[in-house]
Image (cartoon, rainbow, N blue to C red; front, side):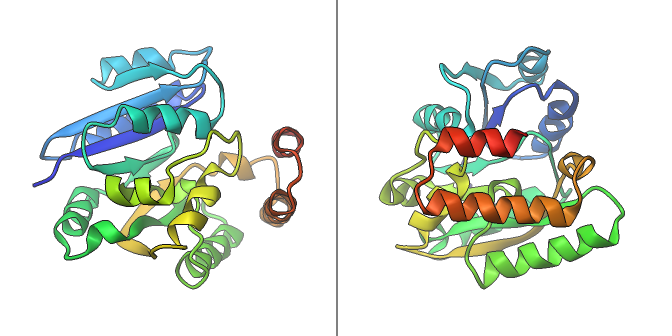
Length: 228
């Protein structure tokens, strides 16, 4: 069975990262976990090292830049990119292994089905819309995870060192030469971004950011709006 490199860009994720690293320990074969940190002020790097992950320090903050560095250090052909506030289903390893042995699996990008860890009806509606956007629109986002073979990553040009939209940027290039497909397993993400904003407000902001990014608006301005 093929090995697996897991890439996790981090920034002040000490309180959440350990849970994800515990999920990853279920992988039964060769595993490389690379935590690429963007300058955390908390114990993120310590938590990663204690769990057995390799820690890389990015010279610049931003998931795109961090993932460029992580990909350059990836040992195995299959790479799984995850956000630090994610949790994996207990059958995740079986689902990923099924992709690895699937005929032609390396020619596609793969994503998990998004679940959000809060009991709000609007979040269930959001999950349904994400599923449609991912399957019909071929636009899964980074919080759904990305499983990709080295050959496809290189053919698509890999990650660009963007401070925002690094996931959408890569997925768009993947779908120019291949397809995105469901892994067939869930990934749960933290509901923290919806604690201070309504689901509709966050969805509207995300749509505006995507539109303005596609129009070429300066990324530093988009980052300020995203963080505000």
